[in-house]
Length: 219
Image (cartoon, rainbow, N blue to C red; front, side, top):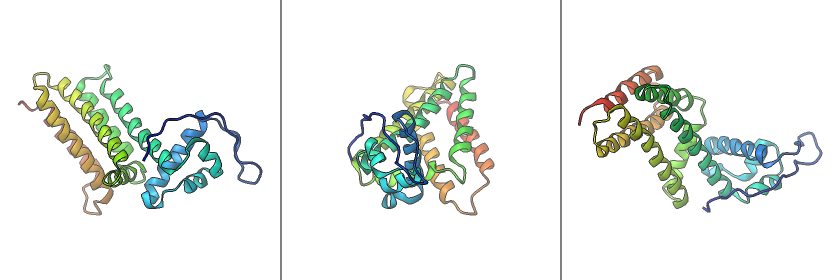
């Protein structure tokens, strides 16, 4: 899959008809298409993902979508970048919020994680699970997923180092990797755990206790 560089001018919406859309431009149309792409990929999987379905979800012509994304791969790569970038940016900002102590920042991120991602009707978890599956067979997606994982681990590493300044950097990195592994495991478990899964609030509080302990423990 080719990596995408956004380049486009303003475009016209579909002409005439009950479902015609108003004129859009790159600033408004691209986010709309990306959100639809997230929904379609999360709900249909890679096998059912197509630019036709994304265009239909938004209610625009295929040619309108292709004005911004020439093919399915271009749109999907842009969508994966957006999803990973969105949460990396959000957690990075929370992790560097000087109005909170380092431990309070960690707790805030955990709450964000549970409130936004580990909810039943979220498209984010199924989207990410589909990305992981596709990464097993597509080098371009694997590269994006791998880079995203590194950036999440860096967020955890920086927080651990701030919470426990005496901890060696290498040990911080190991614990950051374990936290990221736990976060990814929670996504898979909460998606497919079934009725025997503990209550989300129980998992939330246990995660807070576990991540705090991993951050505070001496070497």
